[in-house]
Length: 285
Ligand code: HEM
Image (cartoon, rainbow, N blue to C red; front, side, top):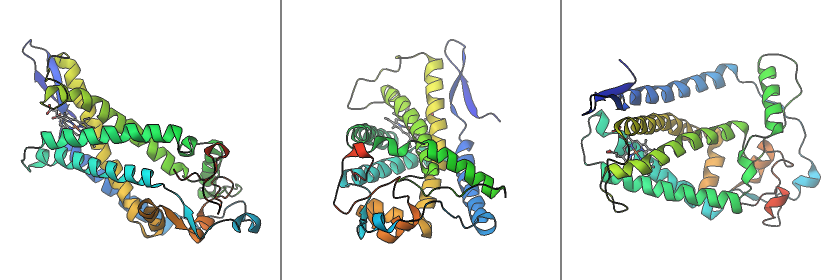
């Protein structure tokens, strides 16, 4: 049983046509295994972490009761993208596991919404947000090494608290970029295979092998997104992360949560509303 399904083209060429659909179950089970392993890790292996750098009263006094985290534009992007993503996952995979309905139109419409929302997000991130806050930096890598050494019982100084996004979130964001761009780029071309309002149908745009590989990449990235979305929702509903999740609804988080979990120098917040992005302060855009 291979991970791809193959067919013979009218010219006798052996071509892949899409992924084997059992991979849907592999991805869903991988998500469930992640939940179980993480719960076991927290229950039996995780240690209370000490952090370098205490909260300085001079800086803490400037932190407002509610710390701004996500602007209205960023929150709207997040929730529009979430609705598009769930619609894409359900319309793509329910028919493959036996729920029959006319899914293609709902799918490409949701795909178009996702594509537009991602284009908006990229422009917003480049010109208005603190673009580098989501990419791993030197401190993240040094602290990751310290955390691994301490976990293994080796001597290492305590890591610093996190910046706005911990390394784990940054790596997750990287995985979403890779899978998201893969489904979007292939999906836009795949719209030439079906009837949409954008351009005339043209199934001859590419040869059978190229189309086949495109469907395979679309499917592989698509099932990857099943696992990634499950992991994302799992963390969003974990009790200790609820303050972060609520900030994606209301835009801000409690002062105590911020002081406990974040490094004031790495994610600086001031009571006096918004500061410029060039100084790395909380811009909340
Ligand atoms: C979460 C993201 C997505 C997932 C999980 C997903 C999954 C899938 C799957 C499994 C198929 C069936 C492919 C096959 O039969 O081999 C499909 C088809 C298709 N997808 Fe997506 N997709 C996603 C995003 C997108 C996006 C962003 C677009 C457009 C920009 C798009 C456009 C299409 C089109 C047009 C088809 C129909 C192709 C056809 O019937 O010939 N998809 N998608």
